[in-house]
Image 1 (cartoon, rainbow, N blue to C red):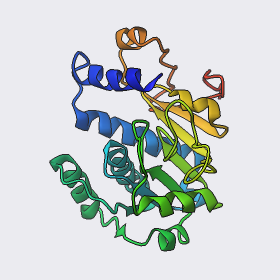
Image 2: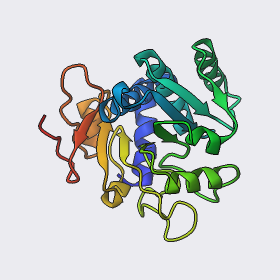
Image 3: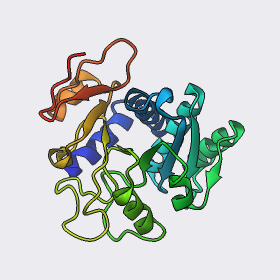
Image 4: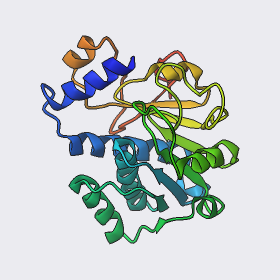
Length: 233
């Protein structure tokens, strides 16, 4: 799904689909939290570092951190550029009420975690990566700690995948959670791939020419193979 179509789909969900932005963010963050639980259960280590950018991708990360806390994990949030929008302020307050710590030193937090959620930049990101995020993405490139990226590995383009050189060119997370529907960048991704879009009406999926996978039970994510078909469990 190209950038223009993906952006149009988001608009469609909030118009004819009748979803609000906070509903979609809640569903996205819930999907991410379930994917993390699937690939990194609490028995593998409860410390989760959630790196959040200032936009919607970061909001998804804030929601995921709240759910992870409720699951029994010990999330820590790196959120250096707080969005002043009321929605993001409320998401931050919900984490504060759960005593989820916000940290300023990403490198130090990375050295003291078991798993990372990359919610820095989403599929619509373009332009120059500004401070403090170049160092964050470089650290994600170099760490041996598994990383789960939200909708797009940070710094990747929706069509071309990782940049040819510079920041993010060697960033290959272990897990990707595609929200609503996979983006073209997935053809460059080699890790475990989940789709979280159990809210898309069949009529909207048909309009945008993608297939909603079969979700099992109460799952909000489904793992798919590189070709896009759901894995049989």
